[in-house]
Length: 60
Image (tube, rainbow, N blue to C red; front, side):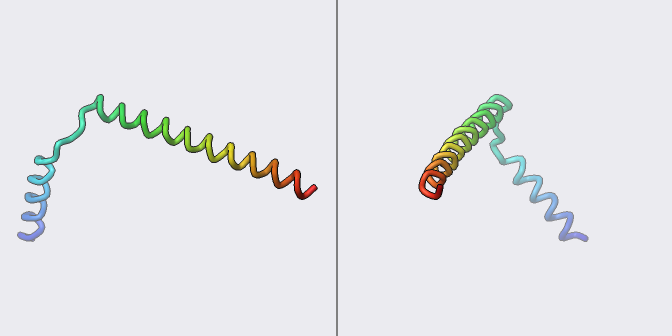
């Protein structure tokens, strides 16, 4: 039991040392991730459509 309590105290101490991002930073990073994800999805969707058109052209 003593080891568990010691572990929790040390973990809490380490969490207090973390430089947590501000609310504004978190919002900016979230918007960036969503925007990059949408761009990549559009790019891959465009490639999928293009390859589909090419395959239809050669197979039909």
